[in-house]
Amino acid sequence: MKSNKKKIMIIIILFLLLITTGCTKTLTDSNKKVVKNPDTGQTLTKNILCQPVNKKTASIYKKNKIKIEKLPECKKYKITSGKYEGLWTSIFVKPLAYILIKVGELVGNYGMSVIIISLLIRLIAYPITKKTAMQSEIMKKAQPELNRIQKKYAGKQDQESMIKQNQEMMATYKKYGINPMSGCLFAMLQLPIFIAFFEAVQRTPIIFEDKLLGLQLGTTPNVGVTSATFYAYIILMLLIACTTFFSLKMNSTGNMEESSMKMMPIMMSIMIVVTAIFMPTGLGIYWVTSNLFTIGQNILVKRSKEVNGKA
Image 1 (cartoon, helix red, strand yellow):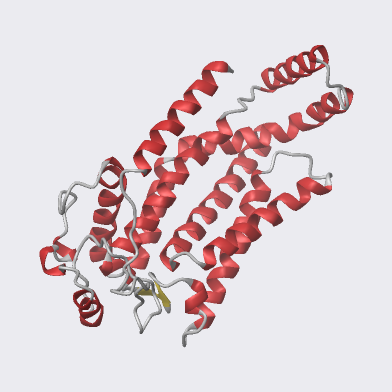
Image 2 (tube, rainbow, N blue to C red):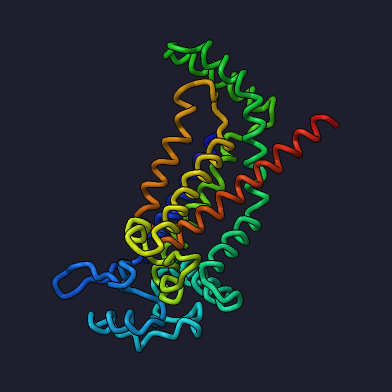
C-alpha cells in the first residue's frame, strides 16, 4: 500500500509541474474587460495557436493589438509552431490541436474531428478501462462481504479494531482479486486529456469557429441557449446529464441499497452538468462521446462475464 501511495504522489507532483507551465489566457481589452465575439458570444482566447479564419474574429484580435499575422495559418499549423510554452503545452496541447486540425481537414468538420479523436483515445486506453470495468463488476460481488466487515467494526475506533478491519478488508480484496487502486488509474489519465481538449479547442480558431449540428464549438451552452439554435444546446446538456448519470451508475461499486450511494451518481451528474454549462461546447461533445464509449464498454464487459459465468 505504501508503494502505491508513493506512486500516486509522484504522478500528482509531475502532473502539477506540467499544468503550471502553460495555460489558456482570456483576451481582454484596454479597460481589462473580457473580449467576446459579438456573433457567437464566445469569450475569446488571447494566446491562440494560429490565425483566425473568420475575418470578423481576426479584426477583433487586431483591434486588441494581437499580432495574428505572426501566427501560422491553422491549416499550416505544426506541433513545433510558435514559441516554447513549457512541457504541458508541448506534450499535450499542441500535438492534440495539430491532430484535431488534420482529422478535421480529412472529414470536413472539426466537431466530427473531436468525436473521432475522443473515440481513438478511448480505444487506445481500452485495456486500462476494460480492466477498471471488470474490477467494478467484481467489486459488486465482493460488496456484501465488505459491508459485513464494516458493520462488524462500526463504532470501534481503537487501533486494534482498525488494524483488524483493514486486514479483513485486504483479505477480501485478495480473495476476489481486486486491486483497490485500479479504478483510479484511468481517472488520473482522463484529467490531463480533458484539460488538453479544453485548451486545444479554446486556442485553435479553426476549431472554435466551426459548428456541428447547430453547435458553435467555442461557445458555452449558457450563451448558446440564447441563439437561434438554442434547442441544440439543450439537447447537448441533456445528453451530458444522461450519459454521465448512466456511466457513473454502471461504474458504481458501493451498496446501492444505501440512500447515500443512490444519490452519488445524481449529485455527481448535477455537478458535471453545472460545470459543462460554462465550458466550450466542443468539450461537451468530447464528454458525451467518452461517456457513450464507457457505457458501451461496461455493457460488453457485463455480458461477457454473464456468458463466462454460464459457461
